[in-house]
Image (tube, rainbow, N blue to C red; front, side, top):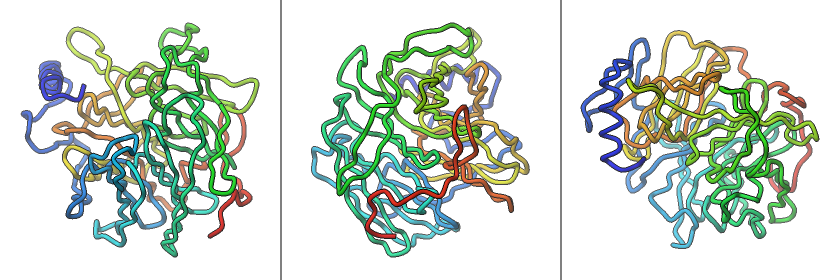
Length: 368
């Protein structure tokens, strides 16, 4: 859904539906009231395709893919840019390959940058206080592809196993990872063909996850995987337990003819009534801030790159209601809590099974 013709058709359908006022194709992005949209930062000179976003304290980190090949076979590097909250640049980090995942370990406050989502994946861990970096490599991928995104839950890190080699996908769609020397060791967590409960119908189905992509945690600490090309979210509770519970939420937006399936990238959950959403648009080469006076805690927003728009997500029906239109290719997104009682969304409270926010032992880091 990334070609111009499809985007024009989707914009026309949305405009006709009456749900939102859609700017003409090619006009500047626009948010519906009471949301306010502003530019956080344009790409530094020579960089392009901003995607993943991470926050450490009062600094914003954005990964720029620069249009490089997602398997790293072109031998090119990506840049991770550290911004102040006013959008000015602090530092630019260089990582080998095509950056796609960017997350903060809440126990160590180190920045994890994941490269090459299609094959030949690597991980770079960055100490943003000292600007020291360490490179880790993966062994052979059990699913035949690369790795795309990460979440930290309790004292474990989970990684989406992207670009599977087989259809049906008989390999893992999510793995857990730990560091040993300079190697990332992985163990399967969620099978690509796992059974799941379809939330809208309550029926038990068999998955065939062909495009595991972005990951996050919901406010209860459950893993939320975006299977991007499959146009669905997969919610995993008790990920390391025999009582693992898997839910499937198909993603749609409303048209006059009924729901239409739509591809999405990052999803962000609101952790406080006070804060803002920050998201990147690869096609517009810009990072944006979306604000309102009060957010609803627990609500979900998603970047629908297949729209393209940013919208609110109904977790019961899977329907996305557009609130920002005129976009090109929205992707990386997160909610920034500005209240005095900030809860880190990546370490959050307990979910279906197990607490988060633990103080964890060092897992192979040789710098702090």
